[in-house]
Amino acid sequence: MKNILVLVAHPNYKESKANKALVEAARKVRNVVIKDIYAESFTVDNYYDAVKRADIIVFQFPFYWGSAPSLLKKWTDEIFMELYENPGVSGKSLMIATTAGSEYEAYRAGGRDMFTMDELLRPYQFTALYAGMGYITPFVVYSVSAPNAEDYIKKGASEYQSVLERLTE
Image (cartoon, rainbow, N blue to C red; front, side, top):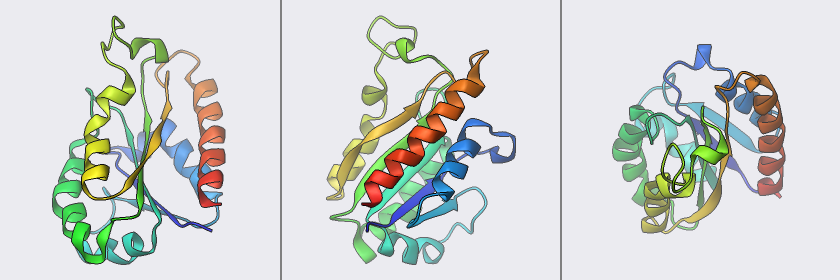
């Protein structure tokens, strides 16, 4: 069974609905460890063992202005790059799990957001490949700001749990 480390990067997690639902879904999956980078000590030592044990690392965050919240970039620069060599991330895989307020159709050429989600998340793919990691297709829950957002969130959380369960096999 594979071990998964989910790194949650939400600056206002207590008020979150979508990311909180994803975390609750992840908690139901065996071999998943969850760390909130906004709540945890921001040191290499705090993440060393979890990264070492993980086969798959998931960056989970709300999608803001075409990217992740800024603390995830800081975590990547200061913690991930230190762990890049020791204990090493080569051979592990990276997956992005994100929530977007806009609907799926907005993320396309000619759409309101002009680019596909894969294009917007390309820097994470680069990071993974550069570090010798595999890159797993991103998991995205769209329409979390829609009038019927609860439906999208509930469905997304269920699908996320299923994806994580498959990845641990």
